[in-house]
Length: 333
Image (tube, rainbow, N blue to C red):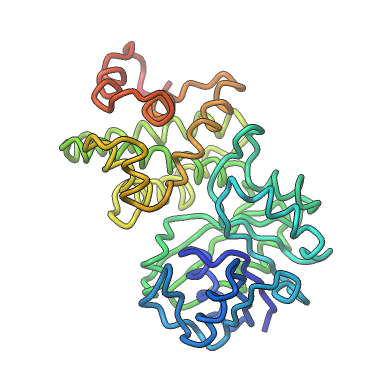
């Protein structure tokens, strides 16, 4: 039995904590609010995020980071990407010297354009070889329902990725090992923005041809950017790439697609936030992704146009027209 701390009690943090508990690990789930931790312990449910999931008896909730991480061999970070640096400023001393530090987050930091593993190393003082990234088509509600799914467990350290993969392997959750941290993270961050675009198109009443076109060209953007940053092109054909992209762009369970759908129906950014009671990750990351792409001179027209809707107030119909009127080119460029 491995001692695991999961810092973040949102949907995916809770679902992944349950995966690791089902795999036989001793898990402490950290919640920021003491009342939520108490409710989880007393009801065996996280009613704020996954009310239908009865949590494993191997899970204990706590609002004390020091207690949650005490003796942990694996520390899982599952907070919003743009709050990671601030959190690590408080948590750095609790991450241990030998533990694997797992990132469930999919984003690029505003202001620095750093990937989440880079933020962990920078703000948390964690050696990059200890950082492990878990990514793939992993919609939290389906994982909570123990529906079969697979994921990539990526790290530069074979030992660390093997440790984490073994700790989360269950009858319904199959981890695959990977060494491409850059590609795994770029795919995870970019797919959220492409999902916003797909949601916008659906909200405007567009059909499957449009959706398939956006997914395919979105994958091309992702691969261009990732390879320019040193990623393995094969990563984008796997679970962290096309797998996660399809799930996030097509599923009604996807927060990014749902958020984009509201924008496509003509709601303003403020109205959409009020209606969904949250800001989708792609909304936060589209600006930083665009800055990152421009820094390596890579064209990302879908990301650019989503950013224009979110931050510049452009209409979704103007964005469609802009994308369709771009200069013709070879598909493989």
